[in-house]
Amino acid sequence: KAGVTQTPRYLIKTRGQQVTLSCSPISGHRSVSWYQQTPGQGLQFLFEYFSETQRNKGNFPGRFSGRQFSNSRSEMNVSTLELGDSALYLCASSFADSYGYTFGSGTRLTVV
Amino acid sequence: DQQVKQNSPSLSVQEGRISILNCDYTNSMFDYFLWYKKYPAEGPTFLISISSIKDKNEDGRFTVFLNKSAKHLSLHIVPSQPGDSAVYFCAAISNFGNEKLTFGTGTRLTIIP
Image (cartoon, rainbow over all chains, first blue to last red; front, side, top):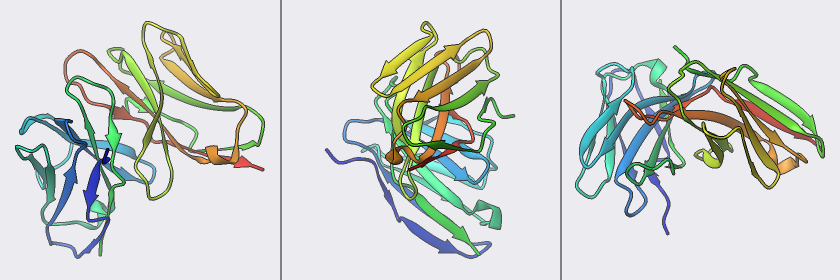
Protein backbone atom coordinates (compact mmCIF):
# COMPACT_ATOMS: atom_id res chain seq x y z
CA LYS A 1 0.00 0.00 0.00
CA ALA A 2 1.11 3.57 -0.61
CA GLY A 3 2.92 5.27 2.25
CA VAL A 4 2.58 8.81 3.50
CA THR A 5 3.18 11.22 0.64
CA GLN A 6 4.46 14.71 1.18
CA THR A 7 4.73 17.34 -1.51
CA PRO A 8 6.80 19.10 -2.52
CA ARG A 9 10.03 17.42 -1.44
CA TYR A 10 12.06 20.60 -1.62
CA LEU A 11 11.09 24.24 -1.51
CA ILE A 12 12.98 27.51 -1.49
CA LYS A 13 11.17 30.64 -0.41
CA THR A 14 12.19 34.16 0.52
CA ARG A 15 11.55 35.88 3.81
CA GLY A 16 8.07 37.28 4.13
CA GLN A 17 6.51 34.85 1.70
CA GLN A 18 4.04 32.17 2.66
CA VAL A 19 4.16 28.47 1.91
CA THR A 20 1.74 25.55 1.85
CA LEU A 21 2.89 21.98 2.33
CA SER A 22 0.77 18.95 1.58
CA CYS A 23 0.48 15.53 3.18
CA SER A 24 -1.51 12.54 1.95
CA PRO A 25 -1.81 9.90 4.70
CA ILE A 26 -1.95 6.17 4.30
CA SER A 27 -5.38 5.07 3.14
CA GLY A 28 -7.59 4.53 6.17
CA HIS A 29 -5.49 6.63 8.52
CA ARG A 30 -7.52 9.48 9.95
CA SER A 31 -4.95 11.13 12.17
CA VAL A 32 -2.27 13.36 10.68
CA SER A 33 0.47 15.02 12.71
CA TRP A 34 3.04 17.55 11.61
CA TYR A 35 6.57 17.92 12.97
CA GLN A 36 9.41 20.32 12.35
CA GLN A 37 12.93 18.93 12.39
CA THR A 38 15.89 21.24 12.81
CA PRO A 39 19.49 20.39 13.74
CA GLY A 40 19.85 20.13 17.50
CA GLN A 41 16.11 20.46 18.17
CA GLY A 42 14.94 17.05 17.12
CA LEU A 43 11.36 16.70 16.02
CA GLN A 44 9.15 19.45 17.37
CA PHE A 45 5.41 18.82 17.33
CA LEU A 46 3.39 21.34 15.35
CA PHE A 47 -0.18 20.04 15.37
CA GLU A 48 -2.38 17.01 14.92
CA TYR A 49 -5.60 16.68 12.98
CA PHE A 50 -8.23 14.01 13.29
CA SER A 51 -11.43 13.96 11.25
CA GLU A 52 -10.85 17.49 10.01
CA THR A 53 -10.45 18.85 13.56
CA GLN A 54 -7.28 20.05 15.19
CA ARG A 55 -6.88 17.77 18.19
CA ASN A 56 -3.53 18.97 19.45
CA LYS A 57 -1.26 21.93 18.98
CA GLY A 58 2.41 22.47 19.77
CA ASN A 59 4.16 25.65 20.87
CA PHE A 60 4.55 27.38 17.55
CA PRO A 61 3.46 30.92 16.65
CA GLY A 62 0.21 31.58 14.88
CA ARG A 63 2.06 31.92 11.58
CA PHE A 64 1.92 28.13 11.48
CA SER A 65 -1.48 26.76 10.67
CA GLY A 66 -2.96 23.65 9.20
CA ARG A 67 -6.10 21.95 8.11
CA GLN A 68 -7.40 18.54 7.20
CA PHE A 69 -9.81 17.68 4.46
CA SER A 70 -12.61 15.12 4.43
CA ASN A 71 -10.35 12.62 2.65
CA SER A 72 -7.84 12.99 5.54
CA ARG A 73 -5.32 14.82 3.40
CA SER A 74 -3.71 17.63 5.31
CA GLU A 75 -1.99 20.89 4.53
CA MET A 76 0.11 23.13 6.66
CA ASN A 77 0.70 26.77 5.96
CA VAL A 78 3.42 29.07 7.18
CA SER A 79 2.89 32.77 6.61
CA THR A 80 5.42 35.59 6.75
CA LEU A 81 8.35 33.20 6.50
CA GLU A 82 11.44 33.79 8.62
CA LEU A 83 14.95 32.46 8.11
CA GLY A 84 14.49 30.30 11.21
CA ASP A 85 11.63 28.46 9.56
CA SER A 86 14.13 26.62 7.39
CA ALA A 87 13.70 22.99 8.38
CA LEU A 88 12.50 19.58 7.38
CA TYR A 89 8.74 19.36 7.87
CA LEU A 90 7.50 15.85 8.49
CA CYS A 91 4.00 14.53 8.39
CA ALA A 92 2.93 11.33 10.13
CA SER A 93 -0.33 9.45 9.88
CA SER A 94 -1.93 6.80 12.06
CA PHE A 95 -5.18 5.07 12.77
CA ALA A 96 -7.25 6.67 15.49
CA ASP A 97 -5.94 5.88 18.96
CA SER A 98 -2.94 4.08 17.61
CA TYR A 99 0.74 4.56 18.18
CA GLY A 100 1.51 3.21 14.73
CA TYR A 101 2.79 6.47 13.29
CA THR A 102 4.08 6.29 9.73
CA PHE A 103 6.13 9.21 8.55
CA GLY A 104 6.46 10.69 5.12
CA SER A 105 9.84 11.62 3.67
CA GLY A 106 9.31 15.25 4.53
CA THR A 107 9.46 18.59 2.80
CA ARG A 108 12.77 20.41 3.05
CA LEU A 109 11.98 24.12 3.28
CA THR A 110 14.75 26.65 2.84
CA VAL A 111 14.03 30.30 3.54
CA VAL A 112 16.49 32.77 2.05
CA ASP B 1 11.00 22.53 27.93
CA GLN B 2 12.52 19.35 26.52
CA GLN B 3 10.52 16.54 28.08
CA VAL B 4 12.43 13.86 26.24
CA LYS B 5 16.19 14.19 26.16
CA GLN B 6 18.91 12.39 24.31
CA ASN B 7 22.08 13.81 25.77
CA SER B 8 24.47 12.22 23.29
CA PRO B 9 24.20 13.89 19.90
CA SER B 10 26.50 11.30 18.35
CA LEU B 11 27.93 7.86 18.99
CA SER B 12 30.49 5.78 17.12
CA VAL B 13 30.65 2.01 17.56
CA GLN B 14 32.77 -0.67 15.98
CA GLU B 15 30.92 -3.12 13.75
CA GLY B 16 29.94 -6.24 15.66
CA ARG B 17 29.99 -4.51 19.06
CA ILE B 18 27.02 -3.35 21.09
CA SER B 19 25.49 0.09 20.52
CA ILE B 20 23.71 1.64 23.48
CA LEU B 21 21.59 4.71 22.94
CA ASN B 22 20.14 6.49 25.92
CA CYS B 23 17.07 8.58 26.52
CA ASP B 24 15.73 10.38 29.59
CA TYR B 25 12.30 11.84 30.14
CA THR B 26 10.81 14.18 32.69
CA ASN B 27 7.06 13.72 32.29
CA SER B 28 5.88 10.96 34.62
CA MET B 29 2.63 10.72 32.64
CA PHE B 30 4.43 9.14 29.69
CA ASP B 31 3.45 5.50 29.53
CA TYR B 32 4.54 4.36 26.10
CA PHE B 33 7.94 4.79 24.53
CA LEU B 34 9.17 4.30 21.00
CA TRP B 35 12.41 4.39 19.07
CA TYR B 36 12.59 5.63 15.52
CA LYS B 37 15.43 5.39 13.07
CA LYS B 38 16.02 8.03 10.43
CA TYR B 39 18.19 7.97 7.33
CA PRO B 40 19.03 11.21 5.51
CA ALA B 41 16.31 12.44 3.14
CA GLU B 42 13.82 9.95 4.57
CA GLY B 43 11.18 10.18 7.27
CA PRO B 44 11.71 8.37 10.60
CA THR B 45 10.73 4.72 10.63
CA PHE B 46 9.46 2.87 13.66
CA LEU B 47 11.95 0.52 15.25
CA ILE B 48 10.74 -0.80 18.58
CA SER B 49 8.52 0.27 21.45
CA ILE B 50 7.84 -0.50 25.08
CA SER B 51 4.90 0.00 27.38
CA SER B 52 5.43 1.31 30.90
CA ILE B 53 4.13 -1.96 32.32
CA LYS B 54 7.25 -3.67 31.02
CA ASP B 55 10.92 -3.10 31.64
CA LYS B 56 12.29 -4.84 28.57
CA ASN B 57 11.23 -5.54 25.02
CA GLU B 58 13.28 -7.41 22.50
CA ASP B 59 13.04 -7.67 18.73
CA GLY B 60 15.90 -9.42 17.00
CA ARG B 61 19.07 -7.39 17.42
CA PHE B 62 17.18 -4.58 19.14
CA THR B 63 16.30 -4.45 22.82
CA VAL B 64 14.75 -1.55 24.67
CA PHE B 65 15.07 -1.27 28.44
CA LEU B 66 12.88 0.96 30.59
CA ASN B 67 13.74 2.12 34.09
CA LYS B 68 10.66 3.97 35.28
CA SER B 69 12.08 5.04 38.62
CA ALA B 70 14.99 6.72 36.84
CA LYS B 71 12.81 7.91 33.94
CA HIS B 72 15.34 6.42 31.61
CA LEU B 73 15.25 4.16 28.63
CA SER B 74 17.91 2.72 26.43
CA LEU B 75 18.14 1.00 23.09
CA HIS B 76 20.66 -1.78 22.67
CA ILE B 77 21.70 -2.95 19.24
CA VAL B 78 23.80 -6.08 19.12
CA PRO B 79 25.66 -6.88 17.03
CA SER B 80 25.91 -3.47 15.37
CA GLN B 81 25.97 -3.47 11.58
CA PRO B 82 26.96 -0.76 9.07
CA GLY B 83 23.31 -0.40 8.01
CA ASP B 84 22.51 0.70 11.54
CA SER B 85 24.26 4.01 10.91
CA ALA B 86 21.44 6.55 11.18
CA VAL B 87 19.91 9.07 13.54
CA TYR B 88 17.88 7.47 16.31
CA PHE B 89 15.02 9.31 17.96
CA CYS B 90 13.46 8.35 21.24
CA ALA B 91 9.77 9.28 21.59
CA ALA B 92 7.19 9.13 24.34
CA ILE B 93 3.46 9.47 24.63
CA SER B 94 0.87 9.56 27.38
CA ASN B 95 -2.49 7.83 27.36
CA PHE B 96 -3.89 10.59 29.51
CA GLY B 97 -4.65 14.15 28.60
CA ASN B 98 -3.09 15.54 25.45
CA GLU B 99 -1.87 12.70 23.35
CA LYS B 100 1.03 13.68 21.20
CA LEU B 101 4.24 11.92 20.39
CA THR B 102 7.09 13.85 21.98
CA PHE B 103 10.51 13.29 20.48
CA GLY B 104 14.03 13.63 21.76
CA THR B 105 16.68 15.53 19.83
CA GLY B 106 18.19 12.40 18.31
CA THR B 107 21.51 10.57 18.44
CA ARG B 108 23.55 10.03 15.31
CA LEU B 109 24.95 6.51 15.38
CA THR B 110 27.91 5.69 13.18
CA ILE B 111 29.01 2.09 12.85
CA ILE B 112 32.67 1.80 11.97
CA PRO B 113 33.48 -1.18 9.71
